[in-house]
Amino acid sequence: MLRRVVLFAALAAFVLPSTALADGMTFEFIASTPSSVWFSRPTSTTTFLTTVVPAQINWVTRFTGGLPGTPGPPSVGAPMPPYNTYDFGDVSFTTGGAVSYTPTSVTFDDGGSITIVSNYAFELATGIPQGTTLFSGAFSGLTTLTQTNAPSAACAADPNCLSSFNYHYTLTGPVSGVLDSLVLNYFNLGSSSNSTGMLISVQFGFIGPTDPYGQIETGRVSVVVPEPGTLALFGTGLIGLAGALRRRLLG
Image 1 (cartoon, one colour):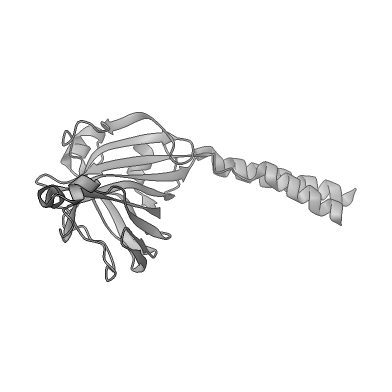
Image 2 (cartoon, helix red, strand yellow):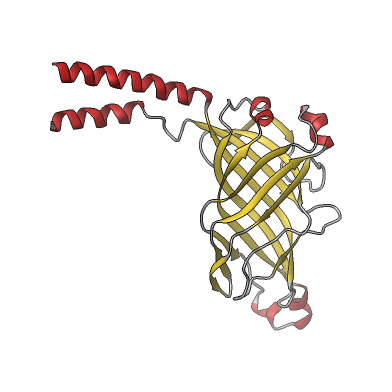
């Protein structure tokens, strides 16, 4: 019996799909023009972050491998800089409720929502109709908002400097959701629309220590989908596994 268990485990490890067998999409975004994306300043009573006006997509690209991946063609737009060169649609999201707080960070529960919608410029670039929901999902785990800088001692002692200092915060957390089939086809990502990923480098700033609202500066959503051959490999592997076990048991 022990030999059979060992054999089954070895064969399963050989045939099951690896997480390395995945490619995906990256959507980079910046503040809308005019800039009007705001977040509540993190406090002990903060329960969620809300985009009042969606951020602007300025770069969409396919990447290879698991997260964060290696960007590759075809791509739409261009990575920053420059700023405000492209506008391919909107990114909007809210977080789940706050579960812990420090003066420089807030941790949010899963939930909320993330939606990426294309516009006419994206249609001209790809043929995917404007208004298409390119990705729809939610935060699938804890999300952390962290202060990434602080004024120098000299700036903190100068009221004029302190009042104009830009406090940067970064929001990071895992996401899961669905990529539209047109995106999958255009970027040759197969037919599986379910995807998982990480919302990374969402940076926004608060001017001075009392500014109640922060403005988004830049952000990036990366989502991974199985490679087209992964499911085929899985099916072939199961067939081989079943045959090997049958021969072993009969022997």
